[in-house]
Length: 301
Image 1: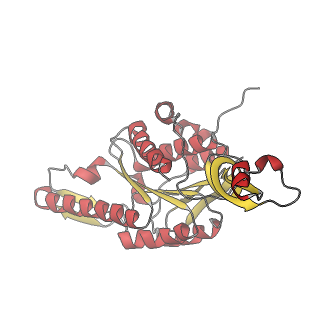
Image 2: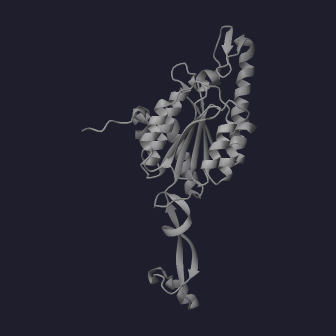
Image 3: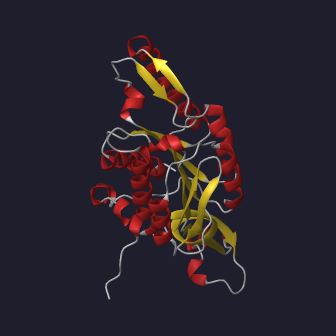
């Protein structure tokens, strides 16, 4: 009998995978793991990266003796190497009501495709994958596991943007689950003050996790290309405000640019990756650009 793909498999975009499939999603920080993988581990083991010497203890494998050091010192020392490890990889997906916005493609569907493609990529690296959806509270949580890829896709497929959001409480609660160091990706439109956003992210970062923020915006939110006076509705609260675009447009664009710049600046200062993604831009190009940039950073570790 043929195996039916998980419903969320439709978000695993072949065009994206064709462009980024030869790249690796490697943790920039040290991660905890139990099997050999791509990521640097805090434990010593078998790897090509030399870490340090330690004195020989009877029973040690003599194949690891550094004979060049013995020739200089007449003492036995063993080579220790940094172990490579698999990682916990978790996507935290904002499903607050504002994520439903989109003129051609909703921010939520764009975010689901991003989440599914990243999860597929790291799953193929044998990393443990998980996902959480949140608005003003945690809606669903699938803990990272090597066996949870299909559950991640099911969760993405079920996710709907129906309730107001508040990034602080759910991320604070989720931080309790990230005691084991790994990679945590937050995907959101980040409609909150930068200080509030980074206060929410900080507990996850301080537990040693490699944190990445993907900021999803619709082109209408970036460019504000409206020309006719109309009432604009806040998707989170339902409040309406009459707006004359000719009067408000320049001020709006300045505010959104300041918000993006503030997020980028704070991310840099706190060692967090940040990337703004416009839903009008093909995801395969945007993701290839980010992963290539991240790969260059990783190689300079």
